[in-house]
Image 1: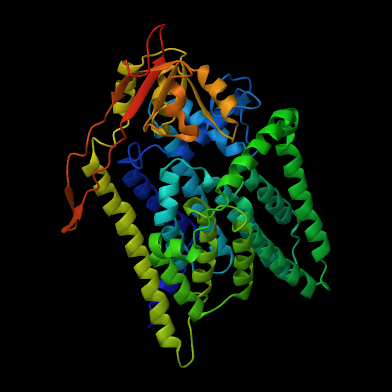
Image 2 (image 1 turned 90 degrees about the vertical axis):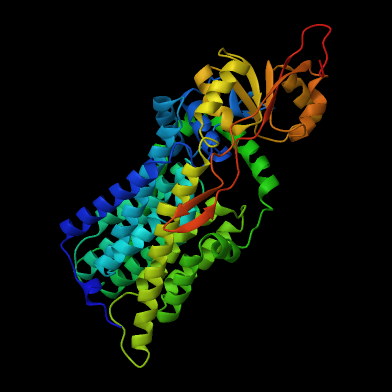
Amino acid sequence: MQVSWIYKRPSARALWAGWFMLCLVIAFVHFQTLEFDPPVNQDEVQIIDLGRTILDPGSGWSVTWYVQGAHPTQYYTYLGLIFQEWAAQASIPSNLGPRLLSMLAAIFAASCALGWLLARGTVPIVSLLIALAFLLDPIFSDIYRGGRIDGWALGACMASCALLCIARKRAGNGLPVRVSAFIAGALLALSFFFWASAPILYPLVLMECYYLARVLHRNRADRQDSWLEAAGVFAAGVLFALLVLAIPVLLEFGIFAASARAMFESQSLVAGVQNPVFGLFAVYDPALLLAVMAAFLVRREWGVLIALIFALLLAQRTAIYLPRITYLLPYGLAVIAFAWQGPLQGRFGPYANVTRFATLALLLVFNGYLVLLQRPAIAKAQYPANDPHQLLTTMQAAVGPGDHRVLLEEWQLYYAGRALGWNMFLHSNPVGEQRYTEFLSTMDYVIMREEFGWYNVYNKLEPAGFVFKTSVSFAPPASTVTDVLGIELAVPQVRYPTVHIYEKAQTGTSLTD
């Protein structure tokens, strides 16, 4: 099956203009429900608060509080954190600012993916369609709609790959590659300071480095850079960026080092979360999994497969969950793109052409329907249960504004607390029972959704001097079903959880008063 239009080569200007328009349409659709879908989550809140404490290292409160050191946790991958905090400052009490910035980061990552695939020699229209499928990927869209900053790290790594591909083409034409190699190295280092999961993509960057070195070695008789010189320039770019970006860390090295120890302790508790990668993709991203498997049968690039094996080994060193496997998506893009490196000939050529076209079409239709139609329709049908503005209204009535010291066991209330001027706390590392009780006794309020939380908080409330103040419940969804293209869908009856508020007791009162 030959689809001639897909092999046409539009001008670069036309291609990127079309891509820009597609991004605008997708951003517009997302914007309709971005503020209330998905609900505020732990990662979103922690990222913003980590950025706040980096900008204000002397802050006396934090929802990532290091109890043993009595200071906020500070994360060394600080760039994306700072961006999110600036966005939060611009939009609080709304959560729209950080989510818009995360969506912009996703568009940046998808644009870098498009540039990388084009630089690899993939058919331009196919490159655009694969990048579009990436931007609409169900896992990735949940990540960036929920305020995570992985898009910056993904984009920096794929931009590095794109520059190395450009350098490879220049090397093949006998042209120097120093500038491209230096910037590629700097971007590799930059990616880590956006988010610490970036090293999962480093095998992909090193694969492109190998391809560049192979071309330089093969053409070593020409008057151009040798592969050793290119490797040195690439390493110099990495080192230069590391030195510049590490300056803020070095200036506050004691706090960053203590925070790093606390984070390693916390991560050790969740490192045992090892969900099967294949199973996660099969459940949450089945169309991509099918497209990758079909593409691998059509045409195989062993370099990508080897890089993917190393990436999986790196990922296995930490917890395996949905945000982490987002960093495996670019490997899937490379596998699918390689299957489209020109028409297929031979006995099975027609069948292979049908397979790759059908799976790419299925990937786009599935992702587009799920992300642009089904999820927005369900989110609107759940309103007002997912309306974050009710959180501010209820907390203003229940607790009120002021610099109250609040132990916040409910992440969704973070934006409301910021708007009301609370000093919010939540410990970020394991700590002894006695030390935790002492920490608890310094609070003015405790807000939690259940009687039993970390360290069995409920049993420590009365010894720490707290009494029950009130419980707050939130609105349920307005609908039970919704319709998408004639398909009736059940609306999950999910609302913000009921929270219990405890305040410091007056003399002679008890927890049940």
